[in-house]
Length: 120
Image (cartoon, rainbow, N blue to C red; front, side, top):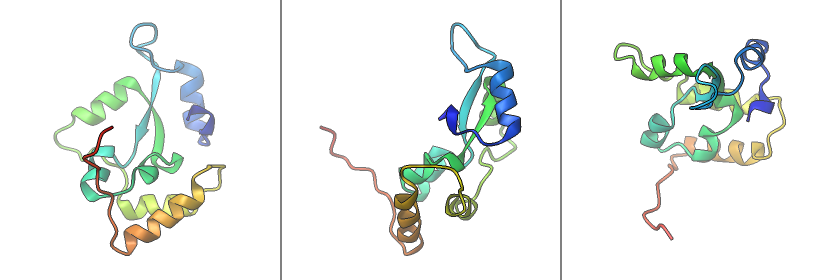
């Protein structure tokens, strides 16, 4: 996912801090979902949309922890509509781009993701 970084600021963060590792690099960067997976699943948004690069940003590990621990600020930076717009206008290369556009249409037409209870 780190090779899909388009934003100059995020490229600089990665270059400056490197990738987070719990033992060897606790000041590194992590991939963050701007519309959180928890919110997405609660809204029935398909996982393919949540994992799209248009929903990801690079943050330092410490900034990501601060974001998640805030009681006063909604941790999500995108609404579903904003995410769908970002996906539809995404200019990068993404193997699931057409699938994501189809899933957006399904969602807008009332279909929702439901987690399967079958685990095999």
